[in-house]
Image 1: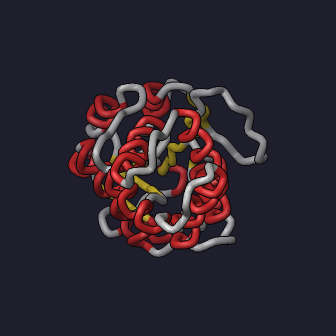
Image 2: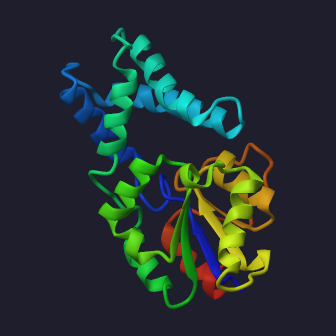
Length: 235
C-alpha cells in the first residue's frame, strides 16, 4: 500500500516548458538583448538539459551549470556572455513569477490529501523553487518540500533520499515499498528512485522509450492516472 508520494516539480506537477519560455523572454527584455524567439528558447532548453544531466552525473557543480549553460547558449546565438551570471540570477526569480499545472495537477494533489502524504523532491534552485511553490500554492498543499539546494545533495544521489527518509521517519516509519516517486526524468527521478529502492512512476506524456534500462514500476501519460495507482486499480 502506497502511503507517501514524492513529487518531482518541474516537468511533472508543473509545466516547466511554459514557465521557461516566459522567463527567458522576460529576461531578454529586461537585459535589452533583443527578441527571444520560441526557437531560441528551444535551443536554450537543449543546452540546459545537457548541463543538468552533467550535474546529475557529478561532472559539474550547481554553480558551474547555472552560468555555464547561459554562456554556451549566448555564444551559440552570437550574444555577449558577460551577462551570464546576472542573467541567471534574474532568470531564477522570473521562474517563480508564474505556475502552470500539468493535467489538473492541483486538483489531483488536493484529492489525494486524504489518502497519502505528499512531498516535493526537486533539484531546482532555492530561489526558483520557493517562488514556484508559493505561486502555485503547493507550498501549502503539500506535506513538505525537499530542495537539493537546502539538502546539499542532488537527485539521483542516494544521499538525497537518505535525507528525505530521515525526515519522514520523524513522523512515521515507512517501508520503502510504501513510498512512490513520480517524475518525468529518467536520469534524475527514476534513477534516483532506483538508487533509493523505492517505487518508481515515470510520467511520460510523450510516450518516450526507456533507454536507460531502469526499473519502472508504473508508467503514466496523464497525472490523473496516479489516483488509480494509489487505489490499486492500476497494476
